[in-house]
Length: 324
Ligand SMILES: Nc1ncnc2c1ncn2[C@@H]1O[C@H](COP(=O)(O)OP(=O)(O)OP(=O)(O)O)[C@@H](O)[C@H]1O
Ligand SMILES: [Mg+2]
Image (cartoon, rainbow, N blue to C red):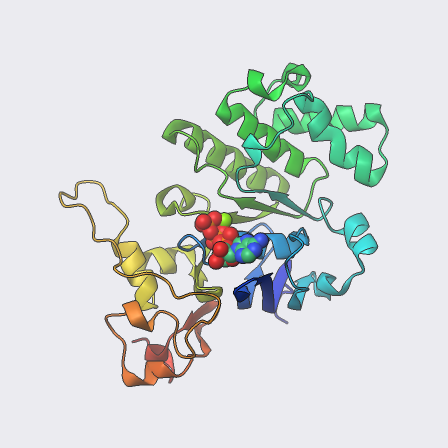
């Protein structure tokens, strides 16, 4: 029997109400993450990555419409849970999130230790002593000496603050940690050491990760799986070696060709053009306007095709079991 994935997202949709209409930020996303697996989610700015993370944690802004679809955790659709149950059983406990720019959102007047322990105390009623003890452990896990718990955010370097927000996400020992651009504001050495922390936690705890990033090179170290988003949808989902080595979607191919390589003289070409508006995305393939391989059939929306086990692509080139 096929393994039930830790996380299985089925036809997930969420829009924001704006003065100009509905912004379809997450528009039919299917994804899965198994235990002890790291899924890297790539995609240009505005394609819906952070919105997807927020739907999974159900921490949406006021103008977000209620999401549709399914978010199954060990086979159970937690999207259908009432808020109270979701807060008790899922958020921070089983799925935790390091939000985009979280390291700059720490409260400047509260010691980091208190901020790290807060989810356990506020949401789970842990005593101060127990929460502080666990906070100290979480700090050590991410490579910060426990006495840093007494410091204020401004007394920590950027890398230390990022580790602190990671400790915050790890504190209740969740099964899945979602990280939204965790290293984009950091220098390369600090990025590398944070990636090493994630790799170690994955190895030692068996934690699963969803890592949202623009940074193909850094993320490739942790990735078991890769999903590429475009205009609110996933266009390709594959094992990391397959995605990095032989991507199937023209957009994935162009993205991989645009990653700078060592020993390459010319700067790689950027992908010309811009993604479509999410207010009224085109009815056909959303990438067609920028696709060198488009054909008249791309005027109607491509379905997701499973090429081989766990390699899915949303592209007309692959409709009849071909590999393009
Ligand atoms: N609160 C909101 N109200 C209206 N539109 C929003 C809101 N938040 C995000 N959007 C829009 O939803 C779309 C997806 O945004 P999102 O932040 O999820 O993208 P992203 O992939 O995370 O981008 P980035 O890489 O820049 O972080 C964008 O068009 C964005 O402008
Ligand atoms: Mg984002």
